[in-house]
Length: 244
Ligand SMILES: [Fe+2]
Image (cartoon, rainbow, N blue to C red; front, side, top):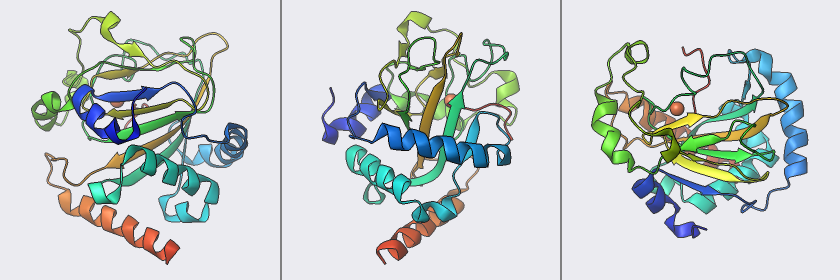
């Protein structure tokens, strides 16, 4: 069990944190109902068959989701004060697929765009439900490699990490409500769903303008951060796969 105030420090040191219990005390039944309705309405608007994307412009209208987001931010310290802002929120419903499991995102890799991602399981996730798998690895060690990825890095396999024993990866299996917090610089992969397995996940992607980028889009990211800040204040006032 990781104490709340050490989550970011743990992620910085070992790449990820996993809590295999409903540590945020979420109403999972309520979230599942919302997930089912929202997914049915919005899945066809996404280019990914397993994903429904939450419209960030309308996020504040959704009280259920903003409540979960507030709990996530409070629990993890992925706050604006620490430079983080929510860039994306996806509903991911993974089912058994015919996709080959020897390609991304099912093989160990790190991501080109660096995020701290938070995944909340809405179902119990066993080994047959496609658990998230991660290595214990300090994310900073991959930073130079990430920044040097070429334009065709996927085709060239530059972001895959083939020389690590698969037994060294930790499958994050646990009951509904379990939460994963990870830095995408840390080698990771998605488990394949098999048999009657399924996995419903809420995935929050937190960006930080202080993460260096190779394409110098820091202005856009600062603006995104500022725009979200304005939205929050108002309240009180081409990929072909789903990356993980
Ligand atoms: Fe990934």
